[in-house]
Length: 254
Image (spheres, rainbow, N blue to C red):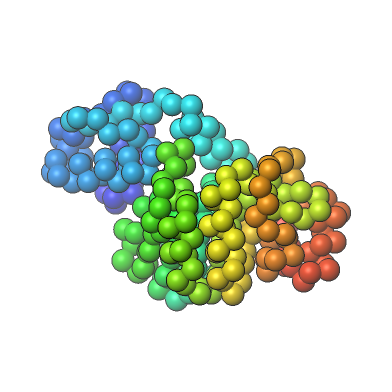
C-alpha cells in the first residue's frame, strides 16, 4: 500500500471512530509502530488529525470543520481547475504553489509530472508532494496557521524572495467585479504578493463562487496575472479585463 493511501485510510478510521492508536494501526496495516508514528506525525502536521499520546484523534474544532467545509465547496470544479492548470505547467519547471483549497487541487493534478521544483507556503501541498522522489519540494518558514496549514509572516515573504520561478499558482478568497483579488489575512496577502513578483507566469485558480464573496485585503489586480482558470466566469467586466490585459481566461465548464 502506498504511503498516501495508508494515510488517507488512517484519517477515515479516525473520522469514523474518533480516535486511532499506534498499536492497532500497526497491526491493521502490517507495518512497524515507527512507520505508523511517522504517518501520524505527517497527518497531524497537515492538520487532518490531532496527535495524542499513543495515537491521534479526529479534530472537532470549528477551524478544522471550516477548512474541511471549504474543501468540499465546488470540489469537482476545483479538481477540473487543478487539471487545467497542470496542463499549463511542463515537466522540469520551477513553481510556487500558494495557500488554498484550489491550489491544493493543482498540486494533486501535478503528481504525474516529473522534475518539478516546488516552492510552497502550504504544508498540505508540501506533505503530499514530498513523498515523490521526482519532485524537489521547498517549504517556507514562518507562522503556521492551525486552521489550514498555511505558512505566513515576514519569514515566509523573505524565503519566497530568494527565488525566481517559471510559474506561480495562486488563489483568492474573493474576486471583485473591478478585477481586485482579495483575501482576509494581511500576512497571507504579503506572501502572495511576493509570489506574484517573483514568477515569470502567474496562474490564478479560482472557482466561480469567489465572484459572490468579498474580503477586505487586496492581493493584486487581475491584470497582473497571465492565466486565469475558473469553472465559469459570469461577469462581463472580468471578461473585459482579461481581454484588455491579455490574460488567458480558461473556463473548465466550457
